Image (cartoon, rainbow, N blue to C red; front, side, top):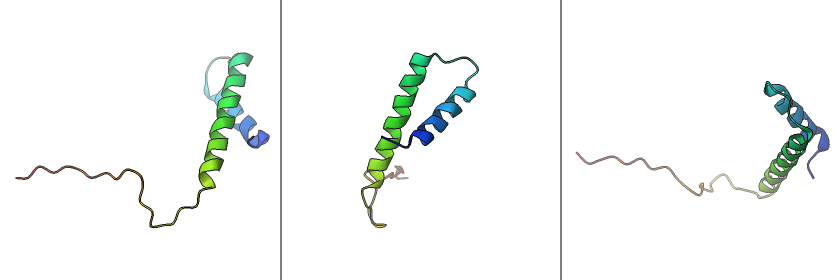
Length: 66
């Protein structure tokens, strides 16, 4: 589980960023989603990457031969 204070800070930011009241049921779903995303980020950071590792996809623009 992610840091509860961090999760709550994100939830409060979401509450203040919308112009209507969010029902408690939805807040719990938002809280779970924020917690899941923070946990996924932590898992990703556990994998060490060397500076020379290329990304999975590399953008190569197509240039039509003239």
